[in-house]
Structures are given as structure tokens and as C-alpha cells.
Length: 372
Image (cartoon, rainbow, N blue to C red; front, top):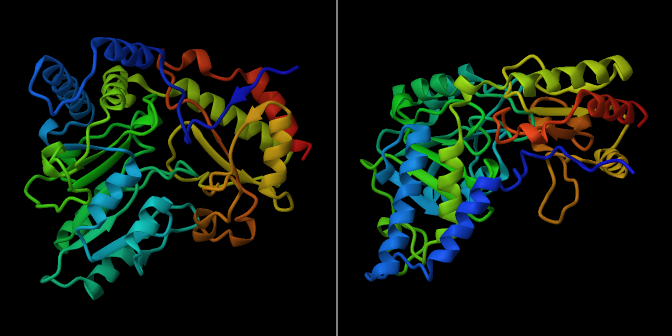
């Protein structure tokens, strides 16, 4: 029987051993509620503030501008509830597309990169100075791994006096993030994308901009997100952030080598395979591919039977494969039900090295793909 191989890191990174230890240690301290003023309350508050510090250092942001939420999705909803005019790209995560309910959509080209010329002309046309406008463009696409030109997006947006939000859930731990240097207004993060537990996210915001909370209650998180804090999740998120090396300094050479090896094998064995965003700048760990006549659900089932855990990149809440709006937006509508995503560990740091797939296993995966 073949060893089960997990290649769905863009969905969830397995809980890091060091993070698990930190959470267990936190549980052993006692009953922690940061709203209490006694010993255990102060301990809880210290844990939260340390996590804020670790995350702030990882993304170069003032820790006082970090609000913890239950997920990146909640953080996005909290932010978007403060704006009536929101402009999004056509490849955003459903958390952005659904919560923004925006009719203002910027297209992407066939490589999955936002059309900056369209964006410039569109902002000239619709932006009104008397109404605050928010532009939301993700840093790294969750399906293709394509990296968006965020600096250019910010430059154009600021030219038209728009605020900018960036969904960085798939960027954290894979590329360098410098919140202050980029002059971003808002950033949203997800803990379980870097080895923290599920159920914890964060909104990083420009404190010069007043936001109205979505959840009201006891005034936790500087009055921005009421409810007793998820201290165990926050502790895990902070520990995972502390463990992250600077992705640019650490490099992702091994991960990129494995990705390129796999792509070369499948192109040789099954030349008709489409690799989405192949010519674009991508993070090293992500591949989205499709075969013209093979439905994605069939490919997933067959690969699962061969002990490879992968995804469509477009699974809905029911667990069924839905049409990929990302693939459609890139001009491949006929393949929107066929895409399959392979996502390796975020980088080749020692944290993940034991989970890196071997070239032998990748060769078997490529042969399984070619037999579809």
C-alpha cells in the first residue's frame, strides 16, 4: 500500500510541532481570559500581545494595528462592512467576492495577472472624491499561485485617492510582506495557512482610518471585535509567525525544484496538459493544471485512490467541485470544471523539510496523471 501523500497545503498547512507544543503549554497555564484583571487574565493578555508582536515583526507592521478574528473571511467581512464602494479583481477568493457584493470588477489576462491599464481607466471613470472607495486585490491567488503586482496596484489606487486592501492569506510564509513600506491600508491573514490551528485570522489596518465593528459586545480587540478572545488560536498564530523565516532569505529552492520537476514530467507524459499561469510570476509551491476532457472530480478521485491528497482549488462548502471562477476569468471557461491543484509546503524551511515529497513520488504522481 502506498504512503498517503498530502499535497493540499494551500487549503491547510498541518499544525507545526512547535505550534502544537506552545498551545499545550498555554492550556497548562490555567483558565485564561484576557478580560479578567487577576493573574490568569494578565497571563492571557500577555499571550495575545506577544502574538501581536510576532505577527507584526513578520509583516513589518505596528502590533497595535492588528485585530484578531476567527478567520481571514471574518476579517474581510469586518472591513468590507465599512465601505459601500468596493472594487475587486475577477480572481479574488470567494470571501472577497461574496462579502463585497461588488459590481465593480477588474479583469485579468490569460496569465491571471490583473489588467492595470483597465484598472487605471476604470478608476478615472467611477471614482468619486466624496465617497471613499476601497480596492481589494489578493497578493497570491489561492488556485494558481500567481503573484499580483501589488506595488503597481497601490500606486494606481493612491493616484485616484482610493484605499487598498490585500488578501495575503496565501502570501504569508511564501513571499516577503512589508506592510509599512508598501503603504497598504488593510491586510488580512489566516493562521492555518502557516501551520497555526484553524479558527484564527487577523485584520491589519491603518489606524488613521476609523472602522466600525461588525460584532458588538464586551469591547475586546480595541473595540473592533467583541467576544472572548481565542487565546489558544492566537498563541498558535503568534508562534507560527515567530517560526517563519523571511521567505526571501530562506528561499524556496527545493520547493521550486520539485514543482518544476513535476511540471516537466507531466508535459512530457501528457503534453496536452494546461498549466494555468505558467508564464507568470508564481509562488514556488502551487500548480493548477487541467486536461481538456477529464473532469476535475474524476481526476481527484483517481489520484486519491493512488494515495495523493490534492484538490480542485474550487471546492465549495459542500465539498463538491464547483466551477472555478479563476480559470474562467483567465479565459479558459471550458476547463473551469477540470482544474486540479497541487500545493506543496509553503517553503523548504526546516519546519517543512520532512514533508517535502521526493522526486520518485512525484514521478509516480506524474504517471498517475498521464493515465487519466
